[in-house]
Length: 244
Image (cartoon, rainbow, N blue to C red; front, top):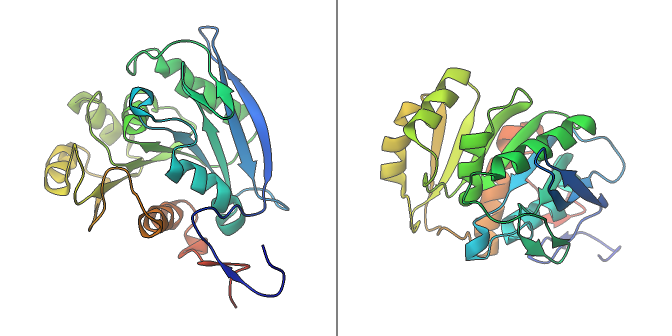
């Protein structure tokens, strides 16, 4: 970016970070490909382990909101961002081993990501799931390492009422960002479904759709995420370097 003054952060902006390709190894013998992004010149204060949308519908580690989180949040919010392809999923990074299992064997994928975060001594781990990824978080994310859940466009397709009750017993924070015009679960129904989870915060996002298309939608998501994971860095700046 230009050195003569702040520039607006746009869709394709990639801010400074330490980025490296990683492999995750599951308990059932599958190798998953991914990337870890860390702040460029300091330790992270918290970690986002991201879980992407449904691979059979085009979801992968580069799904745009997750990629933009990795492109921006290490610099803007001092966060570590781990992205990876679940089993059988391909992206520019490569193809993870195994085959898609509709959320079943993916429990090993979630566990491998959390084990990687623990082994790497990444701090304060939150699961950031999007669509199918929210079901993986709710069904398979109840791990002592996980401080809370951030759910984008949760369809509550594979997760059950029993999963919600289990999270209620854990008492850890859960935030669901629900688009006004979602294709699967809209705010009114989401509030009814999440009523089983008293600590759940359902945030209705006016004008948004399931895929969070557009820079305004992405900024809203990232602002809501940072407000919960590292509120000292919220709201996020819209320029780099940050104005002022």
